[in-house]
Structure formats: structure tokens, C-alpha cells
Image (tube, rainbow, N blue to C red):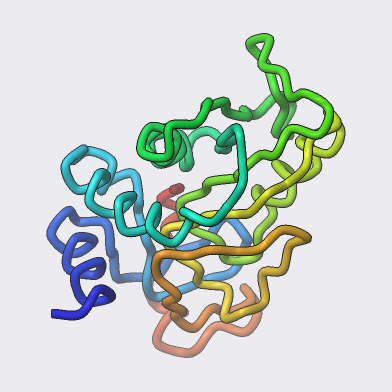
Length: 188
């Protein structure tokens, strides 16, 4: 079994790969959805996935890991643990990600952003903006699943454990078979 098959097997076994009609955080619609929170119920599985991701991050020079709440919290903390780095998180305030809880980023501090899934990259970009606004330097972006089809671009390198894209559709351009299935918004 190759690494991609192992990863997909973990997602299937934990109920994290869903099928139906979903509205993604990006607003796009899809027949498949990665519910990474389901994987995060199983810390042994999180450790396995992050171990594979951390291998790809060994050359990244960073002092701190920043993850957006909620989706990136468990993964970000595990990445920081395995890489032996400091961990902080951004959380929503007035529908915008911010640093709270007196978290600080020093001038020039190199920060790795960790997120569960990226489609368009909005939350990752918010994290990069936070890092820069506090004088830090975005070192890289690490995600479990990149489903952007190569469209998510950041000023820092993007490292993904799995590049796996399912077709996505604008709300007004749904295929006929999806129009008859009620849309769900499961969140990450």
C-alpha cells in the first residue's frame, strides 16, 4: 500500500471522508468532504498522519507553529510537538481570525502555518496576514489535504500530505445529480 492509499484508508476508517452534497467553507459545492475533525477523535491516527507530514517539513526553518481554530488546532499542536516547536493559535473574533490569549510573535520570528484542508486558502492567508502584522515571517504552510488543484498559492511554500481534488462547483452551476440532494455544511 502506497502512502496516499494509507492516508485515504485512515480517512475512511475514521469516517473523515464523506460523500453526499456539501457546501465547503469556500462557498463551493462538492460531492466529497474531508471532515478532518473525525480523524482528530483518534490521536493515534493524528500522530500517524502528522508523522508523515512532519517528514516533509524537516527542512523548514521555523520557531513557532500557528494554526487557525478550530480545524487546525489538534493538527497544529501535534506538528509542533513532533517538530519540538512552540504552538499558538488564531481564533475568530467578529468573524475574523486574530491572535488572542496574549500570544506574541517576535519581529523576524519564523512561523509555520498548519491547517487541515485547503481549497481556496482563505484561512491560511488570514494566518499569514496575522504573522506579518506582528512582524513575523511566514516560513511555510502545511496542510493534511490540498484540494485546491494547485490554485492555492501563498508567499510561503505549501507542503501537503495529500493532494486530492474532487470537483467543486459554484452554487449556480451545480450538476443535475447534485441539485436533488440537500446540501450539508458540516464544517471542518
